[in-house]
Image (cartoon, rainbow, N blue to C red; front, side, top):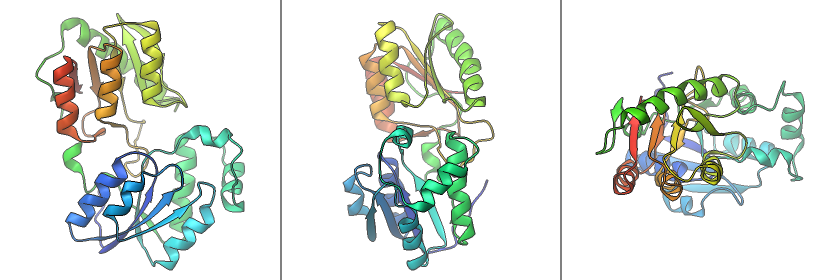
Length: 272
């Protein structure tokens, strides 16, 4: 999907992490005004510094969030940042709109719920933008990104891991697997990538390889695979040897810092 931004004012629906901040900074650099809807207890409060206006809502207040977009007359929005899926199973207050959306969903898979939200936006004539349109430089090209190239053993694990990761992605279970010696050590599910790495470290003390892929027919508006310095630090803590990601479909936040951390730790990073 190739989007073109036609508005000088854009909306930003923000979850956790640094991605919303980076996106807001780039939009501002390009002269756009950014109106953010932030989630209490989830969105990084630092986002306030980089937007023109910010509204804080609770995670269950979907109607309030949509009403804000309409009031602000926003026609193009980004929806970025992690929202923990585990919140689905917690007793948090929800308005009627989001309760109904969850109830009517055919399943509770990530893409199902995200696309249901995208459809709600479309009903209001609000376009959900490709979340990478302003940050293409953070999508690595194919090749070895670090100083150290993978060994043959690491490449064997990367190729094995790609098959396993594509299999779980096809089932929409997760996007990441941790492998060693052509054996699966950990599979990502609801807990997310960082917790998957930690769990792998319990069972294997060194030499693991992480492989991360996109969803099949990845919708670039929704849930783009993302890594960053924290990912590499977690890999360092468990003495990982390599990480492989999908070129042009994975965002590397703070890409120079991430690669520098990997270089210092002796971790090979490959985009396939």
